[in-house]
View 1 (tube, rainbow, N blue to C red):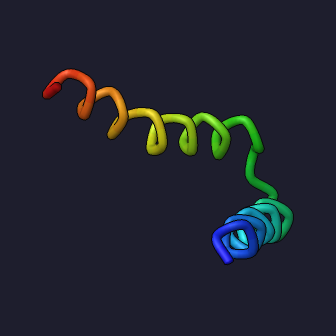
View 2: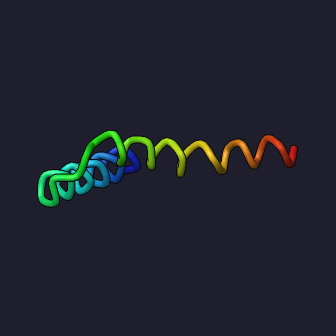
Length: 46
């Protein structure tokens, strides 16, 4: 179920990318920031 949700999430992103013709690098960097940031905060708080 989680795998299906992730693939749907990414397919929406790629659809938006094609629709708005946005640079893929910006979206990828945004994803890295949103996914890595909470992990770093979690580690710092111990």
